[in-house]
Length: 77
Image 1 (cartoon, rainbow, N blue to C red):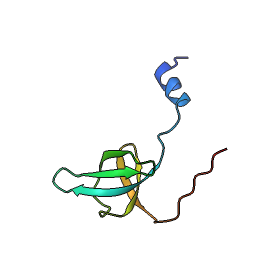
Image 2: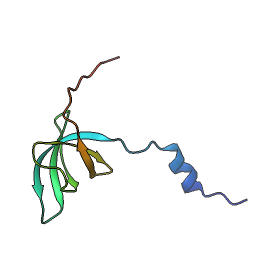
Image 3: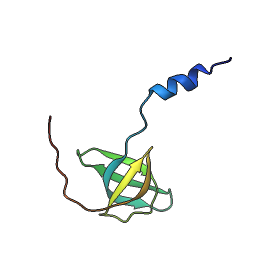
Image 4: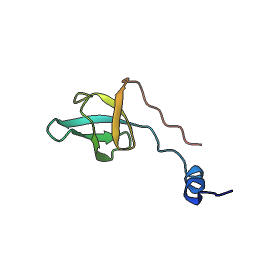
C-alpha cells in the first residue's frame, strides 16, 4: 500500500487560525485591505467586502466576512 508522506505530514500541522481584525483601508483596484489585529500588528489581506472601521474575520490571508463589534477580553492562564 503506497503512502503519501507529504499528506501524512500535513495532517500533523494545525489549521490556520481565524483572526479578528479591524479594517483600516480598502484598495478596490488591487482587491486588498490593510488591517490591524487585536494585538496591534498590521497586515495586507485579500478582500474588500468589509468597510473601513469595521471588524472582520481573516483566515489564510483573506477576509472571509464581517465580525461583530463585541468586547474583547484576554485572560492569562
